[in-house]
Length: 101
Ligand code: H2B
Image: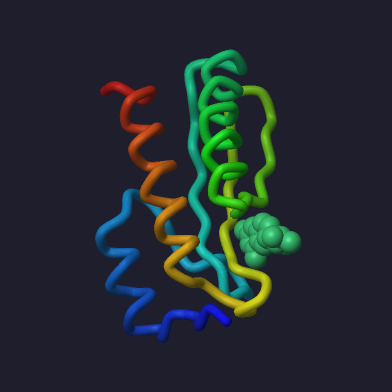
């Protein structure tokens, strides 16, 4: 069974990611993103969904128009594992390619 990261390891991984925080009141990580419009947000979500399906590791997310709030955790570990960090890293890469300054 996959083990959850210690809070020290989780903090170290968060330091390498873009804009992720420990989710309020949960052992999970969360990031909010804002895109130009719904089309851009849903394009991003589509790319993440395809990767999530390949990984068999899926985001909890909430979308309204151009905003996407994402929470990641690993159910079987009841916390944050390397699987969440790997998906968060992919999400950051896709976001970076969409959200140009
Ligand atoms: N996604 C996430 N984020 N966490 C999980 O623990 C998880 C998942 N478990 N997707 C997978 C699916 C599991 O429920 C199935 C049965 O493989």
